[in-house]
Image 1 (tube, one colour):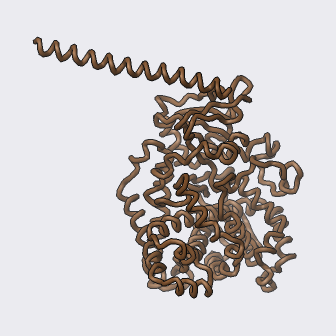
Image 2 (image 1 turned 90 degrees about the vertical axis):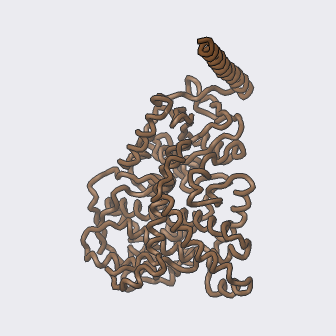
Image 3 (image 1 turned 90 degrees about the horizontal axis):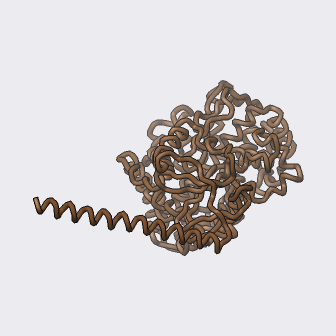
Length: 515
């Protein structure tokens, strides 16, 4: 009995010590935060209800993700900047362009990627999209030369892929079909050819005359499917925040292994060449991997950087093309204006002047540029992103009664910036912000948007491959307009449901007809 009483007394004393320590820590932290806020002349962000420590909201977010409404869920916010929790992790959301400018540019060194390496690392490893600090700087310095003008200007390499795409479209004989999967296959083929020196040829299938043995040579289709599967799981890990480790099942691990095995094959092939042989192959045509292999012989570095660039180069352009043709099919007047510009510059049908379609001439197509800007405004490739504060800092605005005071961001705080919500905000785009209207890009006020238009991010981490993506998308649009003048929509739902993984595309595909 005495032993039991002693044990109870011992536990009670330890419970008391632990409780006292927790209380003392919270009091100290409260006092510290108040002191820092006074020093920085800022206030706490507005707080929104998030259920039980933000655990219930995970199910809400996953429900919206499943239904294709995740990016719209937080679009119509009552305030531009506020705080809530996801799985116990406090997150500040903002769509204010001044705050986003601070995160990405003027206070760049105050923020890091946070858990992105843990979320995306199983597939992407140590690449430009997962690294911070010196690792990121080294990656960017290594990759920047690969996106010089002479590399992105070779549009003629796209033509064989366009011819295969055209064969797929013609097999539908003017009947409705979903063009989005074809765009994903097209951009996978062009991206792998640019990166690896050899396309996965995902557009090669039996429906357009290829034999079964040609369809899946060296497991190329397995690679494309595995890459898609991995991305779905990575996006769920990102939503789960600190609970990311729960998403790690066999399907995910197997998909990552297939992707790595495929990429490793091409990396080892490149590493088997001497410097002289790499130079010789470069004279025959630009190959991203071979140029990178001149800078490093580390196979892991090569694989990780290749997969990082593939993610950006394939998915963003496919999504951009899909949303563009979705809106073109719904807006015949816009399609007519676009065709007029294209036909005047490059001809049409049998009179198409392919030699005139160049990097320089595409940049002079003003209506085409406005069309792509409007698509990127309404359907940004990366609709939301986040950073983590690596020190106590502030955001310029959003706090206080009038929501115009600097907001306190404590060290370790996650800050999500909502590009999709920002680019549909009536404060910056007027009453018709939800209307697809390329003509707005010829208006003086739209040209002064600054940080209210962020199709390729901003600041030091601005997208290296933006000209590559815009050039490829422009070429595809021009060629399809030349080959198929008749376009119609068969999508009844508007606004469309959007699949938001690491990048954004249509949840239910893009049903159109082309003839």
